[in-house]
Every structure is written in C-alpha cells, then in structure tokens.
Image (tube, rainbow, N blue to C red; front, side, top):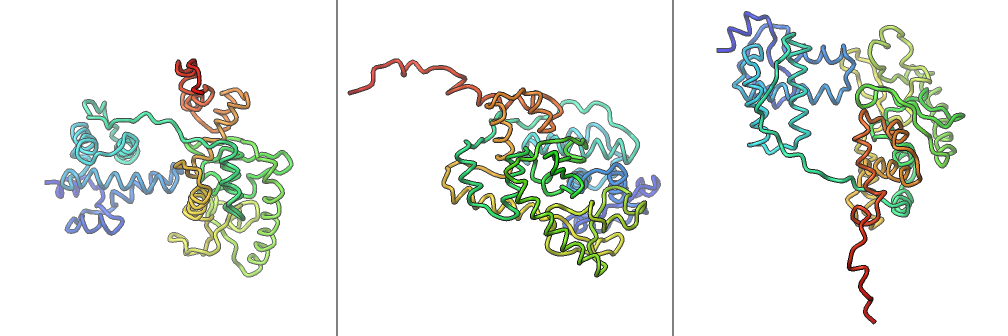
Length: 352
C-alpha cells in the first residue's frame, strides 16, 4: 500500500540528503515532492535554515519509521507510536522528542492542510532538571583573556549582551548602534526582535573591526563581489541590496559560496564551529574545572545581572525569553549555599 494512494493524492515523493535518498530508493511518486513542499512552506514562513533542516529530518524519520507510508494515510496513532519509539527505543531527550513533534505538527498543519487532533498517550522522554553552568566574574576574565580577534569580540557579546551564539554571528552592520551602545537582534528564537545592551568594553575593538571590514567591502564591490544572502524575498524586491553596506555581516566568513537557487557567489557569516572551538580551547587552557561553552557566557550574563540587583523582567527582556519562568532558573545563584540555608555543621567549634 502507500504508493498508489500517494499517486492518487498528488502528494510528493521523498527526496533529500543521501542517507534518506538511499532509504527511499524505489519510491516513484509524482511531483510535487513532499519534502519540497515542506521546504517551500518553511521558506514562505521565513523559518531559520537550521529549523528547516531539522524539521525535514524528522519528517523523513517519521515516514521511514512507518514503512514509507504517506502521512495522509496516517494520523494521531502513528504519530503517538513514533514519538513513543523515540523515547523508549532511541532514548532521546525530552527536547529532541518535542522537536520531532513540532516538525510533524508543522507537516500536517502547514503542508498537508490537515491539522492533527490531540496526540495523547505518548510515553514522554524524561526531562532532567539541570541548573545552568555559570562562571564567576574571575572565571569569565580567565576565559576571555585567552581569546583574541573575532572570537574575543563574539565572546564579549555573548557575555556582555546576553546573546546566543547564532544571534551574535547573524548580526548585520545595520543592527549595531555604536552611539546608543545597542544591538538589535532580529528574528531571534521565536521569530522575535529585541534590543539589548552593547558592552562599552567591546565598542573600541568592534568599531575598528567594522571600519576595517567596510574598507575591504568597498574594494570587493569594485570587483563586482561583496554580496550576502538576504532574509525573505528582499533579494527579489531589491536586487542590489545584497551588496549594500548595511546588510553586510558584522563577522563575515573569509570566503564565498555559490547559492544553489540563484547561482550567485555570496558571503556567509563566520561559522559557529570556529567560535566554539576557540572558546572551548580557552576554557581548557584556563583550568577553571567547569564544563563551559559559548552558551555558558549567556548564562553568566543573566546571573551576574541578577546579582547586581537588576529586575528579573529586565533580564527577561534582554535575554528574549517568552516566559519569565525560563528566566527564573537563574535566581538560584541569589542564594548562598544550598537555597540560602546555613549548615548546622557551621555551628560546631573549629578544631584547634
């Protein structure tokens, strides 16, 4: 079953990356292809490319899990079975299971036009209650002191502005306001914009960096280069905007790539792995003994603001959290010791 039903429905066949293309060998459905429809639906809604990649991955997994049946032939029971399998057999985390559910809900709602009902009875992956790793001010200084150049500037924005790593790397020139010491974070998590503070300690270095890049960009434009990818349909609406200064990345990559849709040579921002490797090396070299990452600097930003007496709603806005409950996790550091309790052992006389 499956093949004839899919052909009658006019829905698409599987396509995509090599691992799944191999798994889908022998499937000859009519176009338009289902995964192409998924890509199109996500791009119309301006979802991030990482989200697009992850959603398509889970749609494939769902279909292959049920023997390549078309999603229109399935419903809540099959979704339930797939999600339960992820928790019981694959032992995925709760966040991964929720990610898979979000992808499948998007498939049925936005692509197939048949929203699912309540998906009940799913065996949920356990959500461990973990507190974020936070560095002290001295530990932050030790890590930052072992960075230089672009990695140092990016790390300073993670700690000094509370940015996520990809938010820092996706900054455009127009999003940086040196006079007001503000950063505009556009289409962040949840597709929201927000304004956050720019640390004074990075202004001078970042100004020199941007000025240097502006001169280099002017030379590239003279050679007919200097184009960057634009969000949404801006490239079609304003054909020359992709080489304008305001749309350039603050932290551009060193080389170009060829866009698969237009064939143009475009410049991407610095890859996140470059910053991650540098920060990891700095953490190891500092010998601080904590499992810290780029995101730890964001955790430390929030924690240190609360310790300085800033209102939790202010911190919530700067971090871009939808719910203040998410920000509340940082209040654990406002206590001294375990929940501010004085141990009874501290009342005992010290040995001579």
